[in-house]
Length: 324
Image (cartoon, rainbow, N blue to C red; front, top):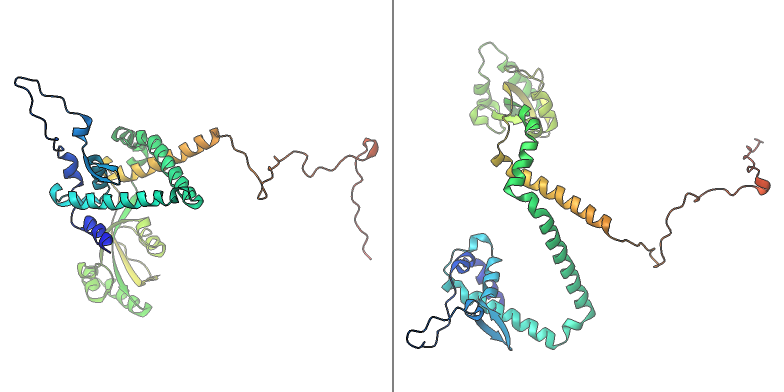
């Protein structure tokens, strides 16, 4: 139970990852130097000192830094002096568990070995793909990708600015439609009184939206209207009955690089990963076997072919069976 509470404390008390990583490690006390002697250069041990031993197994300051770096970003603000002992205690507990497991021979258990192998395989796959993908995710590569798509973005997707009145019955919708069609009627004022939908207090204002932003029934009706037009009939959707008025139509402004960065990164990531997998898989020597372990035979052009009749004559054509 204490171990569980300790793990929780590390993850909830605000972490020191970045702070510890930026804090120079304290140098080990140096022996008094002879007068006028030049200072000795720092050794690797001084730069990365041992901070604990568990059954003779060392834990170094770099291990603590690595563990801190795995904490969530929002938990990396506490002073190192606060979280250092907590993370170190956690590492000591982990090292003690691993040491005991090895002493008990669990590292030789076949099932444990299979799991370790799977974990190692997954880490190697991820490391290889990270190396393959990294060049495609640099700022320069993403900007080049953005520029290549400039011609497509220039036109901009069509948007409409619309208002609506949402009610729960067709009768209510037709009454609202009749009212907004009267000379001098204010659609926004009618929406504030009658509508139960989003933006009702703003006169049913939905702002600008693209076709894909709305459910198909609503989008088809809205994009079928010109600026200033009101839907000829109420429009039914899963939310109820709508009376729609289009205020404006426009081509959406092309997104900037900053606005497109996330989508560019995702597209580059997927494209590069898929290409790398196909390339590496294609270069691999693959042998396939049946479920019983026997080799799979490659398909042949002779599969399903009929052998020729004796003497080289063509086989007789099948004759229909006469009806009785």
